[in-house]
Image (cartoon, rainbow, N blue to C red):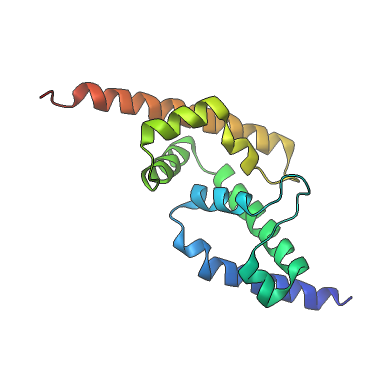
Length: 152
């Protein structure tokens, strides 16, 4: 097994993934959710048909895992206000209403499944805590908007 060659292929697969798939997704939070959705929750292995056809299953799995971790750490480093903006962007890009997304995210906490498997526990806990705070801030902003909206 040629480790240097595998690393080069993983980098190429990451670049391909960034250019073809991730660049079409609005915001890092949307990208994080997308990457988490490529992971089998029973095995922890990632899969992407398009990348696998070009790079093979193992390289694809490594590239998706790498990008998932990278995007997670980018978001985890954001300030609370930046995270609120990311969540607003994510909710606004959905076909569901912002209120519905906030309700589901506060009740079911689906963002927990978006965590990569092997991240620093403290960073993961901080991320979850910050998401909860961001959800509360967005909820409050929506309530204020609803109160200030002109009544017909």
